[in-house]
Image 1 (cartoon, one colour):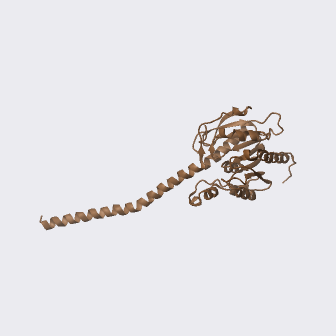
Image 2: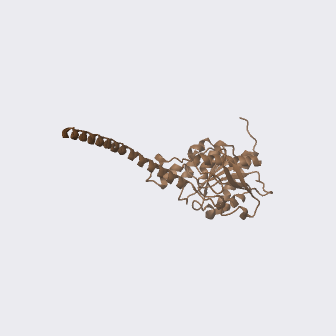
Image 3: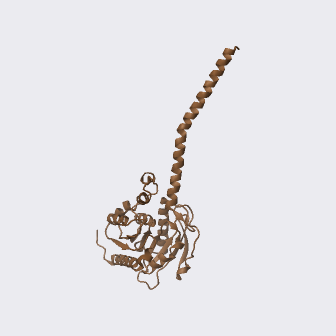
Length: 305
């Protein structure tokens, strides 16, 4: 082999290597942006989930602190998860003992952080069933929008099995729980729906709290309460404070406008989580008036058609 032939072969091999390297670099230039987009998307999903769901596993109370009879219960969801809840029956002598609040709580903590709320609700004469969503407290699983809807249905089923008539179950959604309660009112028969300090949709709140982020474009957790209310056919009570700086009062006004009659917009006081400290009696007055209307509605003769 001559030196000229050897040089030609070497040159050809070098060109082939450079071409292959060029192809790999070209491919990497295409792959790298997709990998960055994937990483950014996964970071967004983590951020979104961590903002919406803030569960606390350890219970800081056991339910007995109210000094009244209660049941610490476990029940199962349609997808096989075991949930935990506390049932506080109404006083035996209460004229409203047939009613029960199905309390769908907010996004943080667990049922043990809401005993004051349960105590206030019990003052209206109705019973209270508060439960933890999946991933909260002693409930199994990991929270998510579709899952919390199943959790609400499972809690409703437990009350039905306990003997409560569906029309005596009042779905009360506090903050995040408003999205769960409004969906429950579409999926299961209830006597009334209470939306307390809740939103039109979670994407609306997210866009207001994080205006620099593409929440409406990338948000996957919706809880679109506003779109559900025109299909809810039971009495609705919307309770909200003008001092709420987390979820503005305009959310309540829009939800009220979207709801069917009979409906009530009841202004309460205090910050988002301080509604009892703001004006406890005002809060209870709204609930008592709503229960009275439900009682009258049940007693009124039903019209044909």
